[in-house]
Structures are given as C-alpha cells and as structure tokens.
Length: 267
Ligand code: HEC
Ligand code: HEC
Image (spheres, helix red, strand yellow):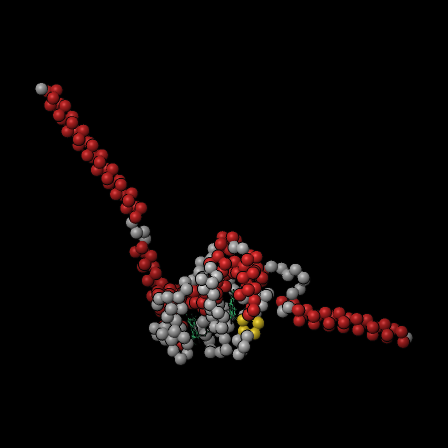
C-alpha cells in the first residue's frame, strides 16, 4: 500500500519535472528563434537616417534652394534635383562644383565648402526625394583586387576620347572641357560614371558593372600616381610639346654649336 502511494507520488514528480524541462526547452528555443529573426537595430537606423535627412534639408534650404527651388523642383537657374540620387550630390558637392558660385560655361572643380558629414546629409536629403544612383562604396580591398590592365582597356575604349590617354583632359566644344582626372578620388570617378555630369555621358551598371567601374577607378588613379617612365612628362600633353622640345633644344643646340664654330674660325 505505502509502496504504491510512494510510486504514484514519484511518477507525479517525474511528470512535473519533465513538463518543466519541456517548458525550459520551449523557452530557450523561442529565445534562439527571436535572436535569429528579430529585426535588428531598425528603429535606431531609421532614426539616424531621418535625422540626416532633416539636417540635410536645413543645409539645402540655406545653400542650394535659391537656385534649385525650395523643394528641389528646379527653376530657371538650375535643374530639378528630384531623382538625381545621392551619388550626384556627393560628386557635385564633394568636388566643390556645387554650390555654383556664378552661372558659367561649366562648373569647375574647387575645394569643397562642406565637410563630408554635411555632404552626406545633403545627399541623404536629395536621396530621400527618391530615385537616382546611390553613392557607391569602394573599399580599399576592392581596389586592391581590381584588374588594372582590364581597367586600362575599358578606360581607353570609353573615356580617353575626352579625357585623353593620360587623363590630362582636353577642351570640348562650346567652351566646355573634359577636366584633368588627377584629383578625383576612386569614389568620385565611379560617381562621375554613374551620374554623367554636364556633357559627360552616363555609364550605368548595365554597361559597366561595379567590378569594371572599380577597375577603371584604379587605372585612373594609377595614371596620376605612377611615375613617368620616360623622364619629365612635360605636362603629359603628348607628342606635340615633346616634339617642340626636341626642335628647340635639339636643333637650337646644333645651331648654337655651328655659330660657335663659325665665330672661332674667323679669329
Ligand atoms: C547659383 C546657382 C546654384 C546653386 C547655389 C547650387 N546649384 Fe546645383 N546646379 C546649378 C546648375 C546651373 C546646375 C546644372 C549645371 C551643372 O551640372 O554644372 C546644377 C547642377 C547640380 C547637380 C547635378 C544635377 C544632375 O542632374 O546630375 C546637383 C546634384 C546639384 N546641382 C546639387 C546642388 C547642391 C546640393 C547645392 C547646395 C549645396 C547646389 N547644387 C547649389 C546651380 C546651382
Ligand atoms: C564625351 C566626353 C566624356 C567622356 C566619354 C567621359 N567624360 Fe568624364 N567628364 C567629361 C566632362 C565634360 C566632365 C566635366 C563635368 C562637369 O564639370 O560637370 C567630366 C568629368 C569627369 C570627372 C570629374 C573630374 C574631377 O576632378 O572633378 C571624372 C572623374 C570623369 N569625368 C571620369 C570619366 C571616366 C572614368 C570616363 C569613362 C568611363 C569618362 N569620364 C568619360 C566628359 C567626358
């Protein structure tokens, strides 16, 4: 009798203990699942992004709205910025082209008047208006991995007709010019391709994918950083100044020697 009561109590205890184990396992599983699938940090990220857009709009109203319109809709002074994307803003403001001081034939590269945080805020505001290419992210690892020789082939096929084989730039029609590429950063080089400033054509990702664009950026940096193999590059203007130098120094020098010999013989 006592033995069977004891056995019944023991089985109740076992059952209680096993349901506690099941409960614990279930709780732990829920925790693991939650950790795996819970949306991470979204609330904070959205708040940060909203803050950047707000700060960017304030900067925009102060520095850009007089030409581009209060809502970036454009006007008779400047084009609309709706849909140009954060890449265009990062390029235009990062290269100091914007804010445009005075309307001219072409916006020039200058020292930027905004710092990178402010540029990112302006880009976030214009980006929030929708559409357009996003500011590219080019890591130094991606640059290291990029194929320099392939970048050179693509550069000669797509860019050299305007910017010259050496990247020194050249005049175009109507007072416009393709600028020297010596100061552009890899990010700015890809941004120029993606946004096509002024009379430069757009090279979209369908035409030149991100890996190829990085390779071109690597090659353009290589053009201005690599030491010149043939001594002084004479401004990299190509055969004309080199020929001129040969004429002046070479033939001029020979003439000087002839005159010197002639002068000596008379004595
Ligand atoms: C004095 C007038 C003026 C001011 C101020 C100005 N812009 Fe512009 N902006 C222009 C004109 C004109 C163009 C078109 C010509 C060009 O691209 O050089 C332009 C072009 C642009 C473009 C290129 C649009 C495209 O289609 O790719 C961007 C981006 C831009 N501006 C951003 C800004 C930002 C941001 C500011 C403020 C920091 C600013 N601009 C201030 C006149 C102005
Ligand atoms: C049809 C002529 C043309 C072609 C082709 C062209 N560009 Fe340009 N590029 C321009 C012009 C014009 C500008 C100046 C735009 C401005 O000032 O708003 C420019 C500006 C740039 C800049 C900005 C330079 C700086 O220091 O601010 C970069 C970088 C650039 N181009 C890279 C390229 C690359 C890379 C290619 C080839 C994939 C290319 N371009 C093809 C005409 C051209």
